[in-house]
Image 1 (cartoon, rainbow, N blue to C red):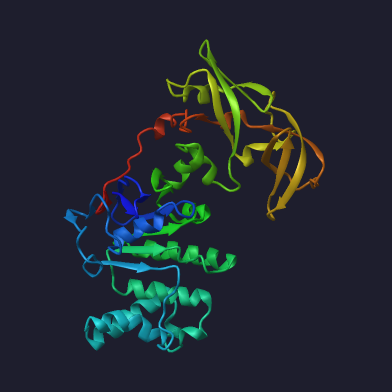
Image 2: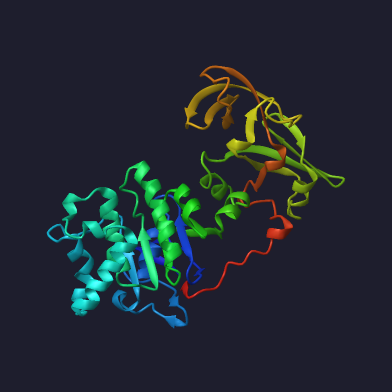
Length: 377
């Protein structure tokens, strides 16, 4: 499926199947095409090329109202002159549902979202989290087969976002027959909420996987950097394969890859320049681990205290690396430090294509993308 605006490609050759009942997250930087993809699924935008299917039905030319979908937008879009009850009841009332059915459905959704005590209030008398629940309730009261959410938590403060993430996970677990597609630019939201996560960049779908496999087996350097916080360090290096062994030169040290990692190298991974990925959690102060032969010397530039952990930006010649450091002794800016990397947790990418040079572990090589009732083609 393609979407072009004024000749500019916003979504390029998107081919994605969504399992019935799953929670799929579309994630990527601003402008990557995730909201446009969601709008095409909702029927608010028509694909420039390609088709949208729901089960066995082609719905490309079916109006939004006939698609059995509900959508929650970034803004709450509540009617300010209506009570919470009237906001929830507006859709069913327009569809001329009976008063008895309307009351039953409003109370059912209000119970589900924990807002039954708020039904008489106006939106102006609600907190941000309560307004978000009402917005969710307006979408849920339709009892859709497909529930679409476009960055619904972006207007909330950090603590409330965490709380609402948990609420949405619980909500989805109760709605066993409802498929949810959730758009966000926040990779932490994506990893904590999604059954599967689809990563987009510049309108192109790069990888669809479970949160764990997306983190452990990134298909490209971009996915490796984007998924995980703090982001993966990507540095230039050299790969050498000889006599059944593999060696990597990076950051001024030469290390032999452990056997299990060397076995995962793609057959076409030839000697020469590569990109080496090292996650901050696999860079540590000397003495924390026994990674012999990978010791480096640098100077701490910036320390970021997250409460449970400390992440430091370390200057190593012209390279800047982010490393996880212990809380004691407390690192300080300008301090010289010796640190090492976990050679069993390196990621290797092709310099030109930026595709991963490592296969999945044998037990994870065959991962089903899945077939379901909803497809973007």
